[in-house]
View 1 (cartoon, rainbow, N blue to C red):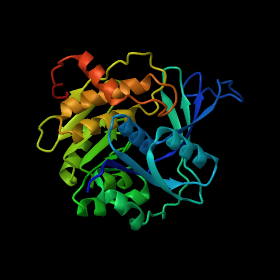
View 2 (view 1 turned 90 degrees about the vertical axis):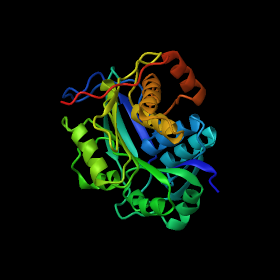
View 3 (view 1 turned 45 degrees about the vertical axis):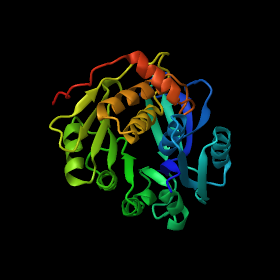
View 4 (view 1 turned 135 degrees about the horizontal axis):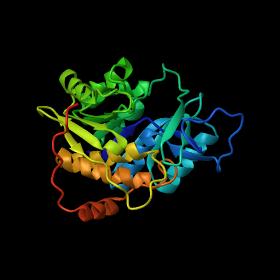
Amino acid sequence: MQTLDLLVLGGVGIDTIVRVPALPLPLADSIHVPAVRDYVAHTGNGYALAAQALGLRTRFLDFLGDDEQGRLVLERYRRRGLDFDYIVEPSGTRRSVNLVDPAGRRLSLYDGRHPDALRMPRDFYLPSMRAARHVHLSIMAWARDCFADVQALGLSSSTDLHDWDGRNDYHRAFAQQADLVFVSIVAMGGRHFEVMREILEQGRARLVVATGGEQGSWWLARGDAMPGHQPALAPERPVVDSNGAGDSFAAAFLYGWLQGLPPAECARLGALAGAYACSCHGTHEDFVTREQLLRLRAALGDAPAAGPAAQG
């Protein structure tokens, strides 16, 4: 019996946010910055909490350290009421230090720390997988091995490749096994339309979505001749921090996709959720709710579906 809309596998850690005067940083012995703060963050955390805020019945599984950072995660989820279970990992809780400039742009220094050989036991995740409609797999090495069970159970799946360059084989293994694939154009050197087509041609994906921050997003479904494009939308409040905006976009897109909405409408929901996230300090501290998202969508009006993206 499916009692979950979404199972998220992997991807929680602690972000230390440092607000800097500019990026790149000037070469200096010391730079005075505002208060440095720690936030429960990373991509799986963003998907799980954003999906929960949108009303999706969500469960989250991961590895967590028996450390101060792990206790921050557990306390956050206790307060939010998120359905979370974990296995203690001796190497500790994953961490990042994110440098954020006044415009909200960031540079992330990622400490993954978990050993490459780490694997999640099947008897730990299979009961949750059997209860789910959809599984989102973060790009942890151990999550890659879970695709076989997702497909054997006949479930739909998604993954987010973040700043993949379109060539690295580690990311390609995820790209070729998920039904819905999110990518960022940041590291693709203008090749994102080519990479989107390759994902559809070489894997099982039904839809590929590429995000470009201020440039908006693009989607390409199997059989489409041209990608569609959704421009970025301005938030109601000032932009203060882009940390977590991509995860909020993707979670709202996934929310629409699970309801059977067309990609153009899913992309509009994603653009609204991503814009909302950019108006919030920190990573994954505040998420648009389903009621807020529907209000924002209604205020947008009956905007026509975005047309094909320009090639070039």
